[in-house]
Image 1 (cartoon, rainbow, N blue to C red):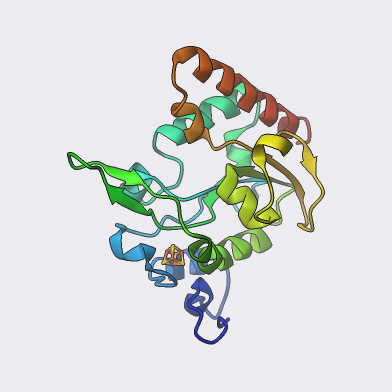
Image 2 (cartoon, rainbow, N blue to C red):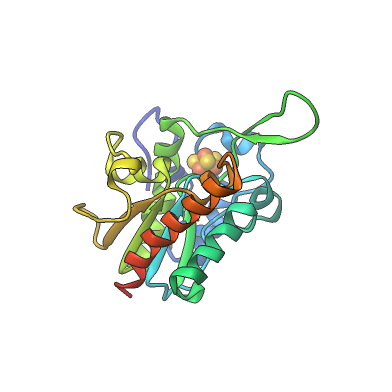
Length: 212
Ligand code: SF4
């Protein structure tokens, strides 16, 4: 697979034989956009190839970048808790991101690496990996976590706040639902809002659970 002339893309790094393991290996050397330059490693999707449900987030975070695995940091723990609370078997799920490298900027003070939202061109450049994952997995359900993932697959006009927790009309070959990214719950200003937002997240996931 080759991208359009003058446009860098993950497609330029695709293997000849496409399967989940060859894709993950090839993604490890992807230079389809500039994000890889400041990241530790590619964080490809993870889960069983028989997964019925695919959760798509924005990009790996600090801990994911260090470990090379998706959704293992604080947001991943919120997702795990919400899956348990909504009755979704974690083993049925494959977790991935629309962008496979961690984009960050240094904190004004100290050594922390702060999440930086990927640009639309970077999301587009990375999209072939996600498309290939979905093609191989053929999941029954796709859950889009947060605006970047939802807009990548459903268009830039899509608003998670207005259309969360419902089955959406899409051209994807699966039932599709959008909800918030679990990291947004961690950013809630106080414990009461955090609890409310978590309950709303679980309510959205219960819609998914009822389909499995
Ligand atoms: S973010 Fe995606 S397209 Fe950019 S270098 Fe990483 S894997 Fe490749």
